[in-house]
Image (cartoon, rainbow, N blue to C red; front, side, top):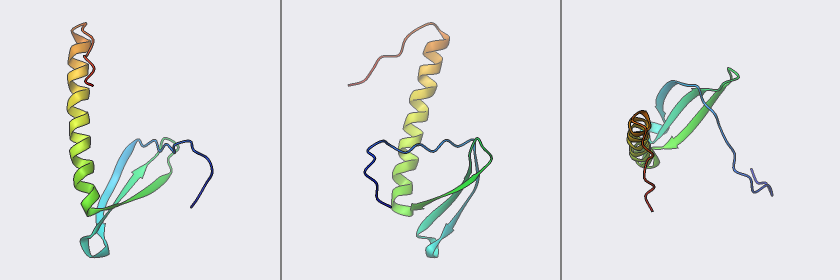
Length: 80
């Protein structure tokens, strides 16, 4: 699909319903639910899945650290 619209697309999810493999194990098919109750399938090549897992883990760790600092009344430092 092509578009002249330069705005990013945003997909909000409320839960991950299931993850399975397709294409002989080369692709992950993640079934996710949105806030409207609709279902979307994300097809993620296995090679990209590893990078996604790493980035999600790193972001979750940063988020946990920010929450801890916030609960102590401190502001997180911004890494440049």
